Image (cartoon, rainbow, N blue to C red):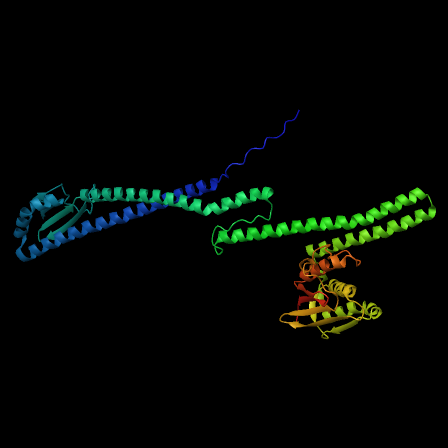
Length: 449
């Protein structure tokens, strides 16, 4: 025994993306902070070493001035006088005779041999004053204390900045991803609300998210329009197919009841006629779909649009004479286009056929053409009864037939095919009409000159 699936209630849309982005940002910021800290620490340490070396040079220069002005004896007296200052300031000093006798010493033991730095990092200088050598050093303890203080301050500052940046990024991520979460929720609700429900614009139209929202709404509107068009086409096709199918069934039932060979033959003829009508409509639908999906570029050649219009018009000259319709062509001798000649000939044949249907006797049809920018403009106007204002926006829809045109033969596919062919050639078609005064169809096709 099978149990029915339980529908789980929809909860809040989970977005791990925000936490992932924040985590990655935190890791990257930590690496950057460590790198900046290391570089800053190294630069500060070099600055302190440079400062200590400068202080040692200042002391040596002072001692050199004393030696030059007062001699070696005065140098020793000055060192004895400044012993307390040297001790408090972290200096160490040793004064050696040339034979290695130690004349003066203060602070840590300093080697008589040439060296620039002690094991603890203290800097050492050697300066000769006559037969005496002054070895001077500055303790590294003060430098290390400053470095430790700098390190602690920098660590606290970087940690504070890192924490603030993480909170800021988390807030920005939440704010920036909010429209995307709305988009996700909106997509999930399409099945419930329908494709016509528009996603509200949550940011500026010029922003990436704003443009994404606009494109999404446009695509949803386009899909909704296509679905509605498909539904209308299917409904219209079902309606148009039901009538011939009903006739075929009634004719067959009547023939079987009578059991008359002549009735059977007549029924078969009716069935063939109705099936031919249905097949013609299906072929027209397939033709429109084929043009909309793909018009093979290999079929396109340099063609003279004037010749194509003239050839299409020749098919309706006799019909125009029979209905006493004045058919007039106002077109130049040459209009070169890159096109499929058979398809474009079909366009103007359908437009002329449509004009012939709705133009009364003693009426007129004018086909005119001329250059308009980079395109050829072709117009087919008639003096017929026109198209109702309510029907005009839908005349290019598949299987659409206005109330006034339902009495005339056809399936409502001619203008759909015309529009599909023109747009497949990167052109445009439009219609203007005034009831009881006539209709004008205008085609714009790119010129190849």
